[in-house]
Image (cartoon, rainbow, N blue to C red):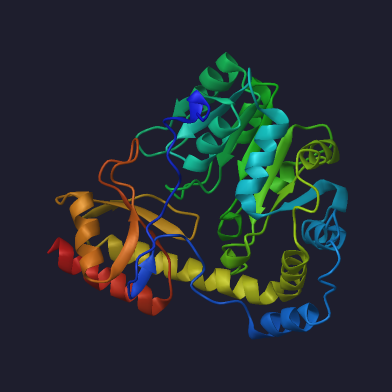
Length: 350
């Protein structure tokens, strides 16, 4: 039995799972959810009717998420992580004979999922500082007229915000759907959610994994015009979101102040780490996310990654990725974890 020919060269998206003292490679929250949330979830699960199917439309969860953004529930769709949201978008608006545009370097799953759904991928390039050139938008979106254009803000793995006017430029250049992935949006000073309007082909993808400290739950959501939300929902399988996940997400939204406090601590630590990296022989780029991209100047990035690992510090090895020669990415952890990383890096670079 042969798989589709166009899947033959695809490789999965992987991050090493290694037993180390300091793991800063997957952009997770370094802080656990509040104990009160955990207890509230346990209390609700104790009376959950497991013999019944969950609410197919996840109505209570969608209503709670919508209230967070000042919208109605028909503007929100919840799914099993932001990756399932992206897959559903590609199934609904991509597919054979259609194109999806990305601007490299960026989140590899956008291209990966597009290709899995038989959507052709067209690629634009970012400038030397990984910024998005507005004229490149005209070339790629205006020239190729993709059915979907993926933007990532803050961008993964660079951490950079997409520039002012980028979303509007994409909307003006093409007629397809514009998808803004804001997996790290809460760490940034602005959001594209404010630009969503009925009739405008713009949606925003978000996740509970980072700021809500719920990576283990695999819960994400889509915000957009109701007609787009309805179209995306039509390609999801029935009862795709289990009752436990719906309860976990809904209850998490009761702890907004705790989430905001965690975000503030991470942003403060991010600033401290950037300052410390500025004293070492590495290049960094501005980050509005919970991670920092850096490149050692005098040592090979792959070798630095290996030497950090030997010191029980794991960061993301981006050294072999397109446009990222020699680059590594470190997640902002707790103060103690960040100190351990900085100390190990200083030793490796000495």
